[in-house]
Image (cartoon, rainbow, N blue to C red; front, side):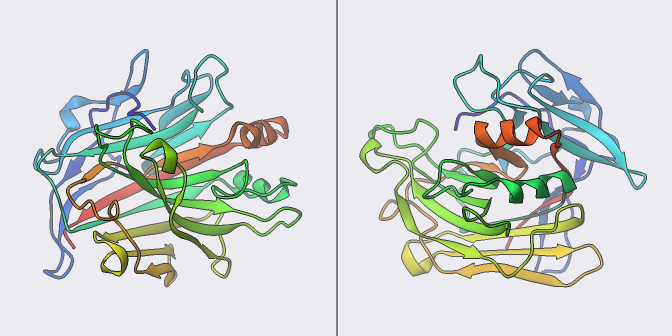
Length: 302
């Protein structure tokens, strides 16, 4: 996917916790003002504080006209300002599928061995209506998808295929046809060269045990140790506010383009709601909201 718009980031600060879990960057939305523009919604530049050593850019966009088909707003929830991203349908006037997506572009010389993030999020309770969709929802083996978190590897200009990057890793929601149980899927797939595009880096993993917490605030923690084969590791967990941590996935898989460690991380999309046009039509046609709220984003050293 292409970079969508330009964002002057929100209120943030650099701090650390214990030596075992250093926070390189963190932000909430306490003192944020939105700055609309024709192609994206930005944030008050005075609140930009993401270190240049970590990111060259941070942006948010929609691949569709806003606010008609998608939007970003700062709203109050329990007396705290939070970011809300919403979808209203797929814009028929654009080539790409409409989405809500924040992209962090790592600094050009950044090549970390670990990429570790967390944030609080709230899936609108209406999103549970996806369970009533009669067909399968799955990024692999189905025509419809719902993606919540995505990381892209660096583009290789010597290959054809997707111009956004060489491969990607996704956390998504899925269901089987004729059932109503929504579950988690973690996947990695090739995007270059064209002959390999959308092929699996490894078999997608499913977690049907930990329920998807619609209508509840929870913390999503996404840890990636970069490496080829079993030298790579992905750990994904959720923790409901006031609850205990639940591990969705802990797996050793390729987290670089296999045999190409020189291809670094290209962009990171921690705040994302990307649904197929059919699903957006299904939800909007039944009067259901498609939005997610976010707060308390952290980027860890390890």
